[in-house]
Every structure is written in structure tokens, then in C-alpha cells.
Amino acid sequence: MSFIVSLLVLSALIFFHELGHYFAARAMGVYIETFSIGFGRKIASFHKWGTEWKLALFPLGGYVKMKGQDDSDPSKKSYDIDSYNVKTPSQKIFILLAGPLANFVLAFFLYFIIALGGPNILSPVIGEVVKDSPAFVAGLETNDTIRSINGVEITTWKEMAEIIEKSEGSLNIELERAGYIHFITLMPKITQTTNMFNEVIEKKMIGIGSAGVSHKLELNPGETLSYATDQTIQASTLIFTGLKKLIVGEVPAKELGGVISIVKLTSDATDAGWMSVLFFAALISVNLGVLNLLPIPALDGGHIMFNLYELILRREVSEEIMIKLTIAGWVILFSLMGLGIYNDINRLIG
Image 1: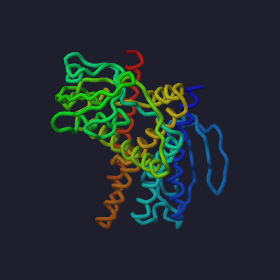
Image 2: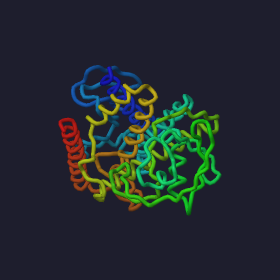
Image 3: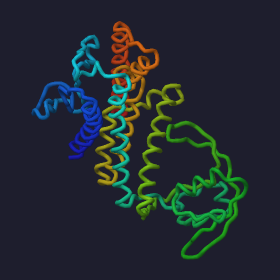
């Protein structure tokens, strides 16, 4: 059941991405020949609004086939009035951007639904206290609840961690222990730790770990919109940062995940409940939007670069260069996919 949910989630995200392209292309007067979810052999299809809508055997991708556009052979062009080729570079860029934009809009909508349902968030309840750390020396104990730091009310673990990291000087901590209020002063210590990219970093810490206690966020309508916006921006920033670190070598290539990881993580999220599925679906939707903006010729970002070239220099990229770059783009794309699957298999058997 979890595996089926994984495929349905991925197919839905791909569908919305391609739907963005579809509506933008139709708005620009481009004829859509095929709208496909998946690749390979056709399983089912129907014709509506002049387009063949089909489901293919391998549902890990999809495409919108516009008249005059063929990534498998860029030399195939049509100059009819309803062809993609006769549109201006600005119109083409609008069509190309619409797919990733649809993913960002979908992620925002999913985070909005999560906010309405009251997302669970870590409470500032202490679990582990590291021996000889500032917290240990100051007398903090397991199950203590942090109520405020330097007069600032604390309601979540994230708020507490951010205040500690950005603090200057000592911290005046108000905490609750067994129904009683205590006041403790301590000095954070710069400590080595690892971040979400497994990089060794240094930051101010006091030597405590979370007890894993969580509570629901109660958000008003304005806070709900802010939550959805902030989560979408944070997810986008996280993925852009991860890609940058991967490209410059700050994160090893073995950390790259593929479609197997996506299916497994979605399956795990399904076991954890529908709220977790929505969280993960929103993150993957942002991921799809960001990845498709990469300047690789086989992706939307690569086509956008070609059109920006034409828009600025007033001439098209030569057909020979276009074909060579497109082939190179597919090689890069399939290499990355292969590396991701290789890493996934290693993780499964390791």
C-alpha cells in the first residue's frame, strides 16, 4: 500500500508540473499533441481538447509534447501558427517557467493544508544533557522545559536553538521543572557538530538534546499564510544550497539520492501518517521545481538558457550546437540518475 501511495504522490507532482506547461502553452496558442504521465509503452489513453492524454508504463516522469518541439531530435521543427517554434523567446520562456512555477504553487498549497491541520513541531523539552557541557554545569536536567531566554518567550525547540546560536554573552534561562519555575544563567560554548549535509561546522551550543516531545501549532489565518510561504521559501533555499554544495564538492556525490530513495522515503512518510506524506510531497514538489530550473539542455532550465541567448543576441543558437548540447544534457541527466540509483542500491544493501 505504501509503495502504491509513493507512485501516486510522484505521479501527482509530475502531473502538476506538466499541467503548468500545458496551460501556459495553450495560453500562448501552442497546439499540444500529447500529455503523458510516465515514459515507455502506453498503458491507457484518451483524446480530449485535441490532445492525447496517456499513462505510460514507467510513471517516474512525464512530458508535454508541443507541436514543433522534440527533445529527442531538435532539428524537427514546425513553423505553423500554432507551433512552439514560431513563438517569441519571451513566450517560450513563459511556457518553460510555468512547469517549475506549478510545483512551487503546489508546494505552497500543500504547506497551507498542513498549516490548517495544525502541524506538529518540537517542544523545547530537554532530553539528553551532555556531560561537562554548559547545560550540565549549570544544572539543567532531562525533562526540563525552557520557557524563555533573556526575556524572550520560547514555544518551540527551533526558536530556542536559533536564540542560542545568535546569542552574545550569557543566557538567562527560565525553565519549568516538575511544576516549579527555575532561573539559570549559563554561557554557550562554540562546539563542533554536523549539519543536515553531514558537514562539520562550529556553532554556539549549550549541550542539550531534544526529548522528542511535540505539540500542534495553532495558527490564525494570517499565520497560516505566513507558515506556507516560509516553508516554501525554506524548502527552496535548502534544495538550492544542497545543489550548490554538491556541485562544488562540499557534499560528496555519495549523498545524492535517486528515485529509489524518493519512493522509500515517501513510503516511510506514508507509514508515519498523512501529515508526513503532505510534508514530503511538498518538499519533493519544490525539489522538482528547482531541479528543472538547472541549466541542463534536457531540462526546462536548459531551454530557458537557449531562449535567453536568442532574446539577448537576437539570433537562435545554431542547430548543430543545439543538438550537441541537447545530447550532452541527456548524458548528464542520465548520469546523475544512474549515480542516484547506484547510491540508493548501496544504501539498501549497506
